[in-house]
Amino acid sequence: MTEHRLGVWQGTATVLGGVLGPGMLVLPHLAAAAAGPGSVLAWAALIIVSVPIAFTFALLGLRHPDGGGVAHFAGTAIGRWAYAVVGWWFIAAVPIGTLAGALAGGIYTADAFGWDSRTATVIAFALLAVAFVANAAGLRTSGRMQVVMVGLLLAVLTTAIVASLPAVSAERFEPFLPFGFGGVSSAVGVLIFAFVGWEAASHLSADFAGRRLLTATALTLAAITVIYLSVAVTVVGSGAASSPVPLTAMMRTSLGAAAEPVTGVAALVLTFGAINTYIAGASRLGVALAQQRLLPRRIASSPHRSLTVLAAAIAVVGAVALVRPIGLDPLLRATSACLAAVMFIGALAATRLLPAGRMRATAVAATALTALTLVLSGGYLAVPAAIAAVGFTARTIHSRRVPALITVPGAPDLPPHEARTGTAGAPTEPGPAAATQPRHL
Image (tube, rainbow, N blue to C red; front, top):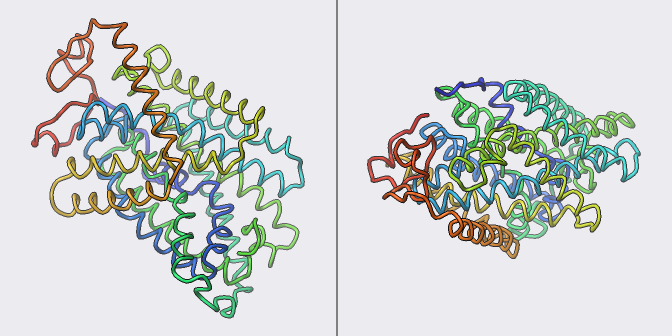
């Protein structure tokens, strides 16, 4: 029987930390640059988009709890190939995305305190190290730390909003649509990065008891609605939208020089919350993929071993980025393309796994909206395509070397003992009844 370790507040902090990431440091400025005051409409559209996507993954986690997360959902609804490709996309995106997020937080923090770029790199790797240590200590410890970090984050954002309120002027909202609705659409494209994260919590679905995942998702949606709209209005109304460091500009209106260190703390908290959630989810996905023989068991037979492999992967990506500077923009876009593909397949799977009625209607809406994110990823869709190609090529080579596997209908490539007894989370080809019934460990 699975030991449920995440309570409502720890779970909410984990989900919220995955959604509210380092992007909040720069997205208000980028959105306002694209749409002017009309960026408020883009933030509102983002919230509307988030609702069906967030609840789709929460409902899937509630009815099909498994460490495989979206990969498990895809495998159950579509087939083993979907389990494999979604798992590979997510686990390959984590080293790239967490490194990019950590570097963004390190750069922002170093800038706030007047430190150089070398210090920014040290800060980035220190954040990653703390996140790995927290996860190695156990999900309960990581969850408690997440509650503290998210509490600090909300305090900093609230301070920025309240500090900038006296400077808000209605005149700054005119003209409201200087670039027309095309500018609003452009801002929506920029802000897509702010809602990736819902799929990460699904990998922790088995660690939630009862309906706590659904409750945590609802609380997270309520929190980001208040935060996103408040920041959108105050960043434009106070004139902070013109600054590339909008949170600092918002707080400077009333805090003066004290705004820099407060913003530095905000950067650390925002960054840690996001990378902590993704590392936690990826470590559990690695174990699930190893159980399905989609990753070598020797590198992901346990969460701790999976964490070690993730740390090594991030170290390799980091070394490459340091030797041949890639830049944050390509890293973030490549990560977003992989996660957009993950969310699309997950939402598509939900249209089969969730029962007819409101749940399935929610899944259909989520599928349509995640399809839009794929379109907006553009040429970066080559990244998930390349990952899938490499993964299937490696599987083909491995299958030729290890032919002694039992193949049974609905459970291909399972070793003999799993073919007889089944494995928790094993993706099978379910019939109509199995596709709509919850599966428990």
